Length: 273
Image (cartoon, rainbow, N blue to C red; front, side, top):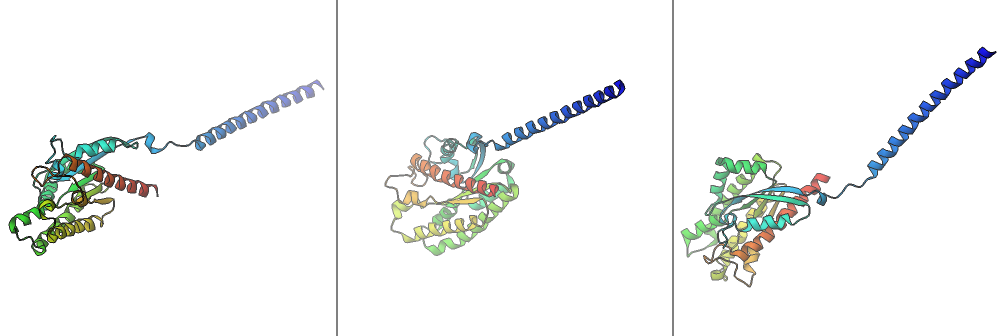
């Protein structure tokens, strides 16, 4: 009898231990489930809590170099840098300036093909900003002045279209992910030739060409600045009556900032789809 009692006692102890082990495992599992649910239910902070650095490469002519800037600090470039860094979701902004006074579209194309510094900057950047075309127009103006007729500019405009298409294609070949912002040209002769319809028509046609070409590419934006100079009541030109002065560059920086933010927002929206 005592042996049976001892045997039953052992069995009871064994079952008790097993029960406690099973209960303990269930409790651990429950705690893990609760912990996982709590982690999953947490709300992730907005992007503005994690500002992202932004790398930009500026390519083009004297408007990128900053000719006419009284501080000789790079025209719109440092102003744009400051404006972008004030945005909550943007961290440090680094802009490499490859503007060169007098560059035409064929010369910028050649520089992109041959200069390693430019190629490396394009490869490492998030955005490329281009100012080109004004010197293409000026070349025709110098060779035909004072007979500024629409027909005189057509051959040069077609060459500009070919060069711009190659510039954009080459940039994308170097960096397929880069966003591109193209700034249009303006008519610096409006002070002297406000009534010359041909000059306005020439500038508008060249800008239409640039806009149509850039719109054929994804992750791009076109920035119009012609109206800034045409509609302003104050003088926005440097003493050479061709390049922007400080106020002109400030307004250009504001317009380009809008273009950059728009293309970045569009890229971000596509990435969320």
